[in-house]
Length: 319
Length: 279
Image 1 (cartoon, chains in turn orange, blue):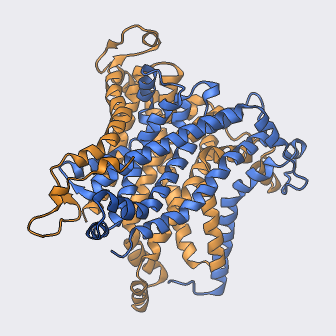
Image 2 (tube, chains in turn orange, yellow; image 1 turned 180 degrees about the vertical axis):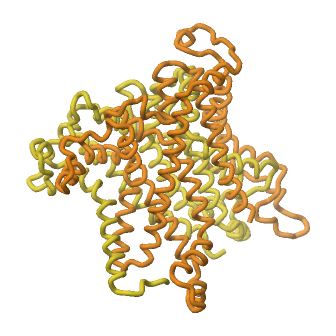
Image 3 (tube, chains in turn green, blue; image 1 turned 90 degrees about the horizontal axis):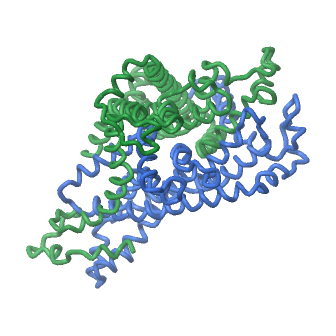
């Protein structure tokens, strides 16, 4: 069925001057637009329309009463004004940004460090590490989340058992009760799941660094550390930059881990990040107007963080 | 390339490697191990490291509830629908973008890139309201609609590379040899695209199968939960979690994913190279 729309404007192609048509042909025919139509419609319906609707919603008073049929009242920037004046929102924003930056930084450091180490491992160990990382990478989020919770279980968890054996007093210690240790557990899970991608990408980039370059630097008397800093890292930095930006973007929107851990015993108010906050506001308490306003704010924050990434990708696209 | 100079340094690096391996693999091992243990072994002060004398009681308990099969059915239908629809739409769009130059082509590519960056968390409130308005909450169609939109940008982006990798000259050559345009495309280009379609299809499968956020927002009714949401309902502080069952459920969800993932891992590479046949 995919090809039925492909009947080409064959007349166009028979270039009379005998020149070959350029591979991507410039065309005035409506064919490419027809091919794009299904995708554009789907994206417009499922993303474009909600986006517009969200902006409208954020300018309305839309609470439980409206959910049960009362017409939504137009309130202008009221929702935003209330939010800006609400210290709790700023707490959540600060928490989200901090969580995002810490996790992205740790993930990058561990991932890149691992990639550097992988270059220096003996072959069997390297294969072992790579297969292990692949396995961790393949784990579904929810399966990973449940196992880690089981590992951190207060009564029968392996982590508490290990720490107790090592001389700590961790018998029955509950990790999710305190916000700080709640975020520690969440970070462990997020980092464990994100490191493989970073490690593999960085490792692939490192293998592209020309060996002659490193050897030349060595011959000129550069120490291993100097070689790393002045030769290897500058060569791979474009890749690392893209990966790092992706980590920041992904870690800002972390929802599943927080949501599930909250259900497993975290205090919601002290552990909300932007995603869960929006969820609780809207779907939890039916205050869709305010939730939409926070969501718009989150989108704006993402745009700011994403701009450099998009610019980078476009530059690659042009070349 | 750069080799560690001394023997002790090399051994140290290998030891760190082994430690990394353990940290990466242990949770996965522990999931499978626990799923095979008896309840009294799970609830003992000292962990049972090996599932000797293992039983399938946990699996039996998970499967007998009936809720697993409900969730499996929902998950399968949403995932398959998403993969098929997204592949067809993306394939058409990828053809347009890589085989034609037209006004708005670059804007479309830029738009894809931007859309891909939209966090679901920033939009699920209004997506929920939209589906509510269409009476599509708690339906496979509703969840599929939002899934297709979230998978499409990446799918188009990847397929575009595969299509561009098949030289148009191959099609031309077939036409010189007497194939029709359609025939040339169908017999020459399409088979070369098969690995790309498989790889992107599996990507879509993994996305939809693992997705949690939208599933928890859209499928609020218990009998409409997808597998990940069903799994999350098992974890309950107040009831005391049945870890054996949870780990059995996790294993059941993870196995197809891990298998598929390991397959594409190789396919992605061979697919990418297969797309670049000597033209």
